[in-house]
Length: 327
Image 1 (cartoon, helix red, strand yellow):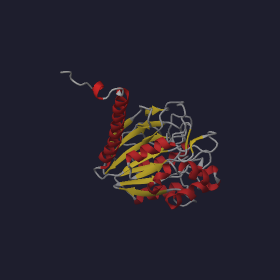
Image 2: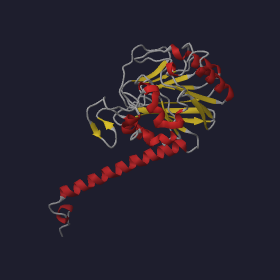
Image 3: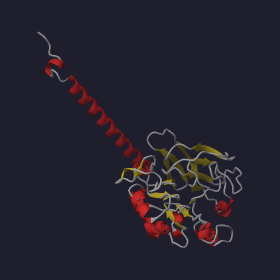
Image 4: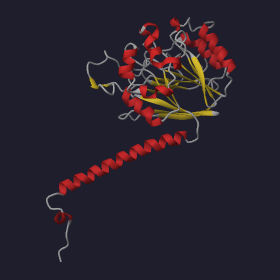
């Protein structure tokens, strides 16, 4: 007796069957990736501790590239704001911290609506932004304050604070010329010192656009030394910045840039999608750097500690992660 074969049962159609099996395998793999992302997000927040996602230098604008790939999504040919926003979506954060220069080249309201909104605008309800220099290319940053509304703070100040779990978070306005300065004795510096005194939290995180220390294109910026002195005196734990279009993590250091285990750990996360800058002069306490990956920093804020993980967009293998106790 001749045993039937798969060729005799389905004569003339082996290629169709094989293609169907391949398609089924692809669909199964895609479903697994989605499940893995969902499971990972659930695991990160299973403890109930707040999760934040942060990046700056985000959305390209009307003069960056001549053609949009997809007018509905706001994605442009080489800009990655949609890809980085998908990382935020997968992280399922409690809050999103936009670190300034959120919309290029000028932070006009119309540009926010057209380019930023389809991507990072999906998290507007949980956003806690700070402005950058490109926001203030729109007169008095009117587009920024109109888009974000009251959550961005008073338009004459742009700095504010809030609590997440056991953490105190401080959003500062680094555009000093528009708020009466950033140095010692300025209105913002006095507010910062008062806010820290009123909120002696176990863990403190501050964020603004331009970094005090940077190995990137713009380098160190002493303008923000007074911020660092107040934060260091209050034993703050973390500072987040953007401005340089790269990722950089520093070891804990004091306001003068000396390594100090009880100092502040600074992250530069100017990787929200716009572009990248090359590193110039490597600073002494810089421990991790990358100037090719777009992505976001995801942090879990536990009652007395924190963990971080830099998530890269598809096509990049760079990652950085760690944990630390609060001061």
